Length: 374
Image 1 (cartoon, rainbow, N blue to C red):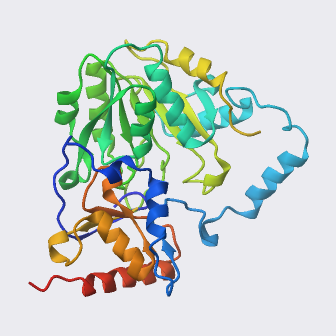
Image 2: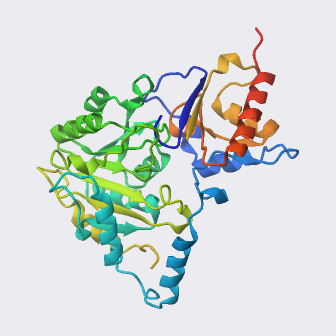
Image 3: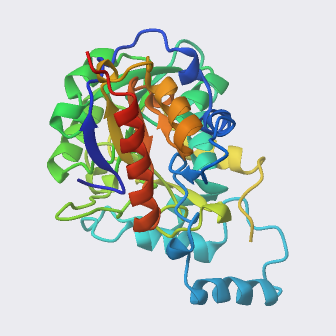
């Protein structure tokens, strides 16, 4: 049990391969959810558990003091001009200090290491564009499966081949390190790691993160560490920033305010570069990021349910499960196929307990009606 996700088993999944993706996997998350919403049951109010937006319900919204601070900045008149391309100095410094908390001495970040972006999505876009900038040939980036679809989309825009390594459900969704070694080659630009993991919810141990860094170090590539869910952990889990291992291999950290600070609509994210340790094929990454940021607009001043299809009648896969669930119960969940994990569904549980209870009751009722009695 790790981030804002929890695993409840109701079924068996097929394996994760590098086979041709089905049509649902090539769609966007928002497009899939919009399509599912069209099938809602008009007799029941929709319970949206498909999109990871923590600000949907009032109980998760920021306090009045945060809003007042923003209003104060706005009315001061100091921030009506264009912001610097890399972000306001005070903001960059604050993020550097935040990312350096708990990091070993000598590996902390400073203002010049941080670049402010329009949310985490633009941070991903800039990072992948910079990694592939000026490169010719069949370059590739290694990324997790299941994983966040946006990485794959931005690879396509930058003529980078996405290569997928497996996350292992039987090992708490840890990275298949042998698989990483197997698919890497001389044209590999980076390894993407999402921790805490989206969509699986695992939080990787300090030891496992060190293992990942050591593999990247031997391959002489950086780790792109997506920490948008950083510090959102439950129980005895510990969030360890990947920059803690920058002495082994360079670390590019991606983050933002949206999840931990509950303000996704503010669209404020960042890229942070660890000080290079050792050789890199892409030695100009910092320069390339700065060139890109000088010509693009800068920022303004889950729960898994593993579906055992064989136990259900008239349901053939996870997309059909989500479609029929919406049609009958008006509960919106995200099919796992779009994240690279067929016959699973993702349920975002950033909702009040009473709403979650009603949603789970509806899902249970749906499964009972469709139970295969053979």
